[in-house]
Picture (cartoon, rainbow, N blue to C red):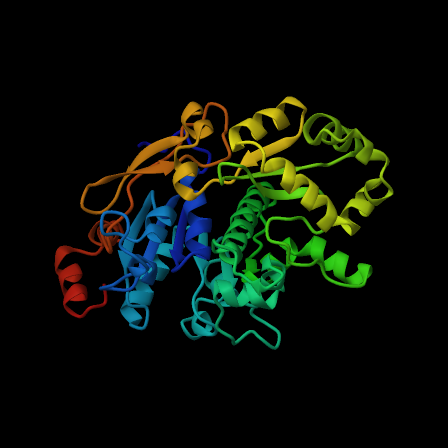
Length: 397
């Protein structure tokens, strides 16, 4: 698809990236029309290519994160590869990297070195715990950060903790890197000033922990683990219907509470019960309240319950598995699916980017094979066929 009409058309991003956080940030830039050149290791490439083989032999992570990019292989330990990278950076707008701690500095790819050599380039560094401070040298992965921020201690049941089922720390860092780069591009365009961007997984997820952090520091203790229940609202959670399916609903205010009591539970007198008079009272007597709600839900099928709750203005939903999500009527009715090809030519379904810009088409280009664009990019940089053959013979590319 031509990207001439897309907002970031003309912006070039070079990324030495792997795994989730940096590829997620750069894929979103590619979605908006940026040319994203993904630098990978010769041979295997980004190790996320080998996380699984679920999508026509390709990794589900990689297919999700790397559409619309070009793949260039470079062994950055080799001086010749670094020269090629700097040739690219002379014409680039953004450089993103999530190399291991200390690696960018050893390769001369840290923000300070890049700013001196390429004054117009916006460097974006994604790290585990920041590039300074006592943990700057620590390796970090998503679940480690979930543990360090306390998220795992909030997730699960009273009996056991649980990880969040997606790479939430990586995704948070990727989102902040994406918005940080957009801000830096805007600032450079309007003022001429270049601001390097730095994001850590730890600080990104720390921001998302804001509510439980305040609750814990000023409330005298952290929110309990309650499965699908909510620590500060009741009733709020999933209840089992007579057909064995779970229905989740939430009561957010006193009007909804009165409607639930009168029109669903059939017990309007509960609104005057001192155990349930206020939101705080309902949380304090959650077990008694949940027992009342559970008994009522056990008498009806899930679809009947959902219909009744929707009819009285209570927000509710069935508890879907992933297969049900894939067949969700909202995605179908709003035409959210497009086809993207993967290496080998197979087509896979991909969701459109969630932010719709009126009049701007979605860019949904192929997922690249390892090094698929190496020869073309090197030719753009002035390397002839003989030079490229020699670089490949020496495993530089």
